[in-house]
Length: 96
Image (cartoon, rainbow, N blue to C red; front, side, top):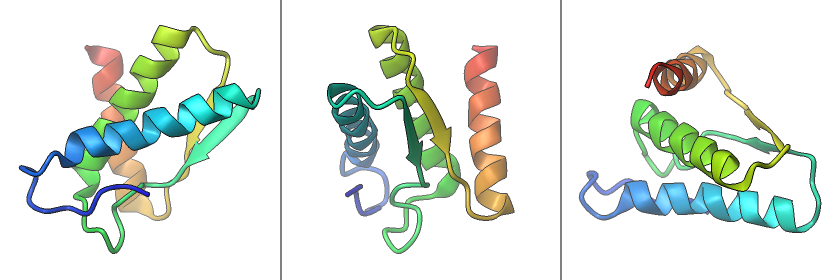
């Protein structure tokens, strides 16, 4: 479960990143070869999509680099707004 958005000053970004890292750790521990993430916390929990996309893609990218893991990770984006946000976050990471 991801964090409820409380305005951004209640540690939401770290909680969201931790949620992604924990899922990756569990997938790795059971030998999974792929993992799919929805836009965690972006629905009824109110996390702004663009911010969540940046946090999620950065957390997953950092974890994969640190673990040199062959895990195939997919972000499942329901709707154009979510897809655009995650694509923009991915491009920003690649450009950095």
